[in-house]
Amino acid sequence: MTLRFSRPAVLAFAGALVIATTAFAHHGWEWAEEKQTNLEGTIREVYIGPPHPSLKVETASDGLWTVDLSNPAQTTRSGFVEGSARPGNKIVILGNRSAKKDQKLMKAVKITVEGKDFILYPERMPK
Image 1 (cartoon, rainbow, N blue to C red):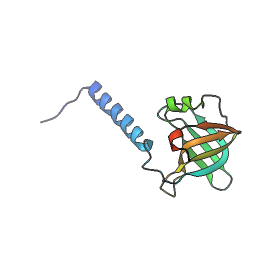
Image 2: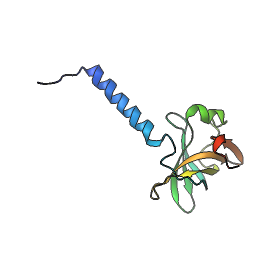
Image 3: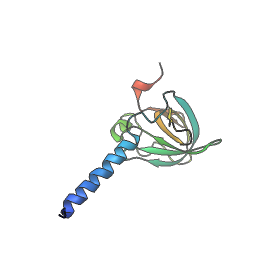
Image 4: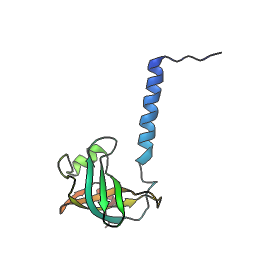
């Protein structure tokens, strides 16, 4: 017996799988260290869009990092929108680094671009 699937059904399944695996990759905080740290550097790339806006930040001592921001709506509510930062801007990020020591990935709680603060997760700010 051979199973047959229509092309729309196969495409719908493939699309759902891609969305699900992308969403799972960085949603939540389980993949990150519990301790918050600062990362300082220079912005090399800015991406504003789903599933998460992100930055590529080069540090003087540790090379290029990927910094995940919050979801697009929450990032916008923080005031960080298209044009808030450009490659070459200095940045300080308060956030949680990946628990995998060899992975240069951080989830930002607050970013400071050229002296201007953007608080992405107010509930996670140190008290």
